[in-house]
Image 1 (cartoon, rainbow, N blue to C red):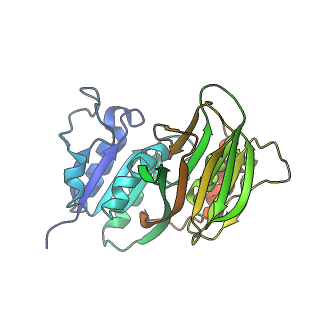
Image 2 (tube, one colour; image 1 turned 180 degrees about the vertical axis):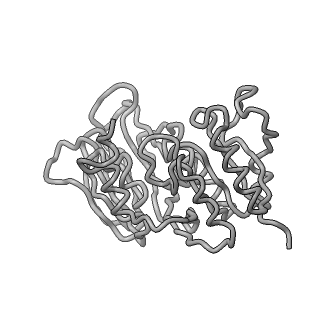
Amino acid sequence: MNPKKIILCPNPNRDRGMTATKEAQQILKELGFRTVVCSPFRDQKDGAFADFDVRPLQQEMRSADLMITFGGDGTILHLAKMAALHKLPVLGINMGGLGFIAELESGELEVLRRLKDWDFQMEQRMMLDVAVIREGKQVYTNLGLNDAVIREGPISHVIHLKIASDGHHLADIAGDGVIIATPTGSTAYSLSAGGPVVEPVAQTMVVCPICIHNMRFSSYVLSPEHTLTIELERNGRKPVYLFVDESRGFSLKADDQVVVRRSKYAMKLARLTEKSFCEIFAQKMLPGGLSDEK
């Protein structure tokens, strides 16, 4: 039987000198796995990956069995779309900030030895299909793990949005914008905007306004069976942008429709520990947890 192939995908801005990547590669080599190193980003500086032979990511994903990332949750978000399209499970090593999506911390690399028998759990994380319809034609499409955000541009101003669910009116928003988040994204921008914390393996969509003027409306938690349509109202020539998982903003026009629904694709996250989401959230976010240690 051919050995399992594992892609090591380090963020060179996080794993400086490739220290963690080298340690992980040695452990996986001892276990009999085949590894390749790929860059998560394009146009990296020469020498950013030490002496590793960096292979093309898209090409290597076609025949890989697992991808291990070294960085923060941002690195995983950047790779989520490609991983989902290739149905490739991801295991994150957190070398960034809070790290809600990553499975292990940088000091827990020995836990990788649990991959030996290839008997580990897999979490399915819901994703969003996001499209922009302009004059009856689809002019933008994307796949997101965390959220779709509609907000004002570089000039601060109130924007007006009309939200419908399956063609029925849901809410009118006047404020800085709105976040449509998955359960995974509920602990990201949505949480900062006052949205609810949702268990990441749940199947829901969170509609969370950003700095809304109508204080009677906080947020909605909806079934993933709904299709949401967001339209711009009374915004004139004021710039309004769509962002999917912190991607480059897409400029919206007055009559555009942003359509958001649950995707048929899902992110697969490998789990090697028994850590529960509640335990991780308590450690990293609540008073007395890791976020207070410094």
